[in-house]
Image (cartoon, rainbow, N blue to C red; front, side, top):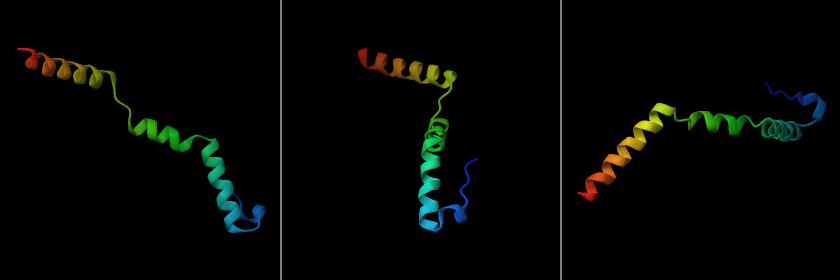
Length: 60
């Protein structure tokens, strides 16, 4: 968990900047994006199979 004490930075702007820096360094945003766009192995297999069937239809 990331936390910033405003009293240590003096102003809210400096504390907000420090918070954003800590979030960026912790890779929290990148990890959440990876998790939201995750595709399971079974889903990948299903998509490949569907794509393969679609391309074979055009060859006929």
